[in-house]
Image (cartoon, rainbow, N blue to C red; front, side, top):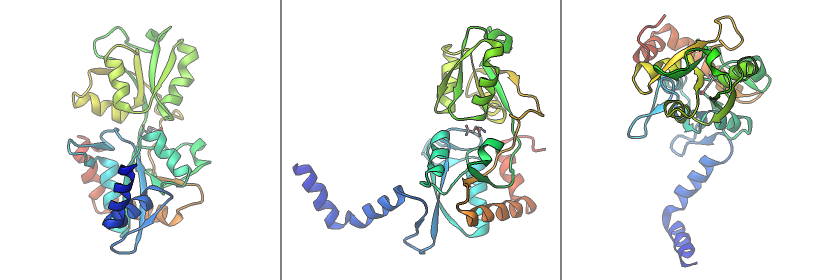
Amino acid sequence: MSMMLDRRQALSLGFGGIATLMLAACGGGSSESAASGATVYKIATDTTFAPFEYAEADGTYVGIDIELLASIAADQGFEYELQPLGFDAALQAVQASQADGVIAGMSITEERKKIFDFSQPYYDSTVCAAAKAGGDIKSLDDLKGKTVAVKTGTMSESWANSLAEQYGFTTVAFDTSDVMYQDVAAGNTACCFEDTPVMSYAISTGNVALELIAEAEADSEFATPYGFAVNKGENAELLKMFDAGLANIKSNGTYDQIVSKYVKSVE
Ligand code: GLN
C-alpha cells in the first residue's frame, strides 16, 4: 500500500512526463517525437537473427536489417523506434497495429501477401537444415523417428512441416534461433530448420558447432527474398519511403557497404 503511494507521489513529483511518454510508446502504432513533433514509426524486429539483427554485449542492436533501416530512415528523413520483439511476435504486433512495420529477415510469400504489404525485395534467401557437426545425422534420411527443432511462424518451419511425413520426423517449436541451435548442439533435437544465410553465418563465426545437412531447391517456394512489411492497407507512406530509400542506398553504394560488412562475398 505504502509502496503504491510512494510511486504515485513519485509520478506527481516529476516522473509523470516520462511515464506518459513511455505509455504512449507502448500502446498503439506510431507516436509523436517530443522533440520535433514528427511521427515516430514503431518498427518491430527479431531478437536474435544474425547477421540481420542481433544485440551486441551492451544491448545495442546491429546487423544488416538494422543498418539498412537506419540508412533508409536517414535518406528519407523519418524517425523510428526499434522494437526487438522476436519474429512471430513482431509479425503479430504489426497485424494488431501495435507496430507500424517489421524488418526481420522476413520472407516475402504469397500467403503473407494476403495480410501484409511488402517492400521491394532486399535480400535473397533460402532455407536449410543443420545438425550437430560430426554427428550421426548426415541427411534428411537420417531423421526417421526423430524430433527436429523449428522456429515458430517461419518459412523454415513450413519447409520442415512439408517434409515431416516423407522423412518420418516430428517437430518441436522454439521462439528464437539461438535457443533452437543450442537445443540441437545439446543433442535434444536431431537437427534444426533455419534460413541458410543465418545458419551459415552462425556456423562460420564459430558460434554453434552445427553443419548443414540439407537445403531447399533454389527454385522452390521456400527460396524467397526478404522484404520490409506493413499491415495490409496501412502505413502506405512508410512503405513508399522504405522503397524510395532502398533504391537510393542501392544506387549510392550504401547497401553494398552494409551487406559486405557482415557477409564476406557480396554477389
Ligand atoms: N525468413 C524467415 C521467415 O520469414 C525467418 C525470419 C526470422 O526468423 N526472423 O519466415
